[in-house]
Image 1 (cartoon, rainbow, N blue to C red):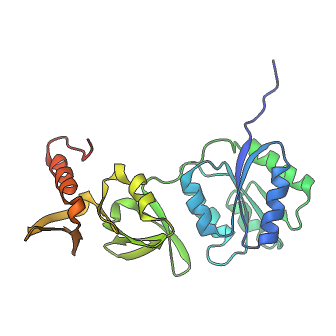
Image 2 (image 1 turned 90 degrees about the horizontal axis):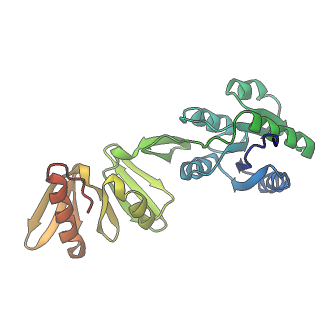
Image 3 (image 1 turned 90 degrees about the vertical axis):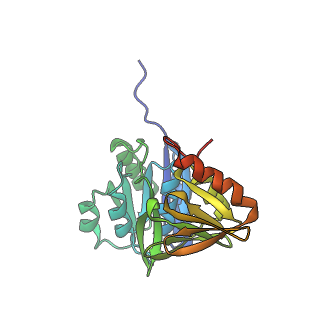
Length: 251
């Protein structure tokens, strides 16, 4: 019988300093136990990458602007299946904090290749090939330099702003780096539909549909939003289907 061989790891590397990021990615790519390396220069962006799936372990710097590596690890600890975390830093004063967060390893810069190989072994021993599961129905947003999660069910409507989108909730707006077309595709099953070239609305939050002089609008929360002529019939059909017993709003 052949010996057990763990599945190759898909890792995410997080470091705001490009030379360190590139060096660590290069070293990891040389390890035959690594299947792929994804890089990002901020913890906030790392959370977005993790939400897309396909990551088994996280190698992160500690000192970064905005969300730090330690704060990132605290967020990851709330995932249903938290990914193994390896801290990589030029300072050793955070070691105690790191291991209180159940870090798999703690490496000092400059990272030696043999020491990094040992960290990879520890990740594999920790079960790092299990798929990472992030909280369902949650979106990471930045507010005043702090990243927090908001439930998608609280989003009333979404407004296009170039390559970004603004999520409108009862508490206010949150800008995320995602085009409206992408959200339209990904959130369709959650009841979000386009009513205008720059607007998506959450059907569960539509309070009224108004028709005046051939113009259609919807009341979402306290906002009245105009529905383009192109999308009026589709919206009314969807709302009628949802109103039927057992209706889901889908064909």
